[in-house]
Image (cartoon, rainbow, N blue to C red; front, side, top):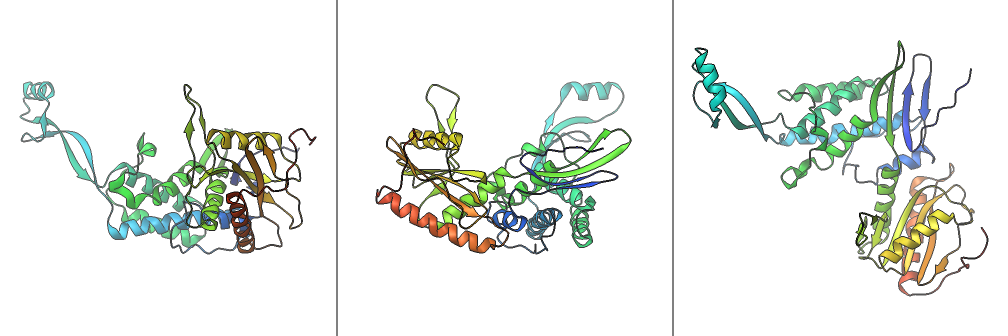
Length: 360
């Protein structure tokens, strides 16, 4: 008996009693992890150095990143937060709850029921970190050394309780800026791991993470590094009179150009949806240049020619994700092409173009 398993836009491992499925990224794993190291999740310094032989290595990297950041927070001290308590006290503390206090006194119990706030490390952000480390300690797909390290971190986080409903929505405010890198990693680990009982008596485990957002963040960081000194940031522009918005993956120099990142291998001709979307982004920002960044498997692979539609010129560039090319070489090549494209866009020199009416 054969089964077809489709896992869209995710990478990871699915384990069943008799089979283990490795969901690999569209691009070679070493390129994927390299881009992962460029995204906002990656810590400034990390001990994660593993052999990239399977998709399990990806979670080894993520696990070590999360432990690196959590250990850094433990060394500096976890941030306490005010927690609300409703308890019986021998003396009034905080606010007295009259009705509950009266009922207890009528029972012959001389206590005061009080509502008060108290600083405690048992706060939402700390509970999220603890939950992620507990998951890491239980993942048999990780190395023994990483699981042991995770258990040591859990042991140090005494006095912190289990995750409560709503903890995953806790925001990292300016007072908790030290948590800015640890919390996204912890949430990624918590969201990606799970257990299913859908096979009856057979229990299957899975660890799957979404890939488009990671690739988008990594490539946007590469664009920002290539265009040093020029602002490169995600875009969001609300359309007047609607609840709709235009969200290009990156906006260059405050709107002089916009870009869109596609996690797929590009062909020699334009995909209509990609082209129309890029033109719409540029039009909404009144930009004259738009860029689509994707992937190519061959150094000699042709990319779509630049297209001019009205006042908008749309170009395509690609990260070379071939098995024979190192990620560092691919990044250097894309950076060079990005600088050339930007210089050309600024000088308003028209590139090769084709008419929109030409057949694809």
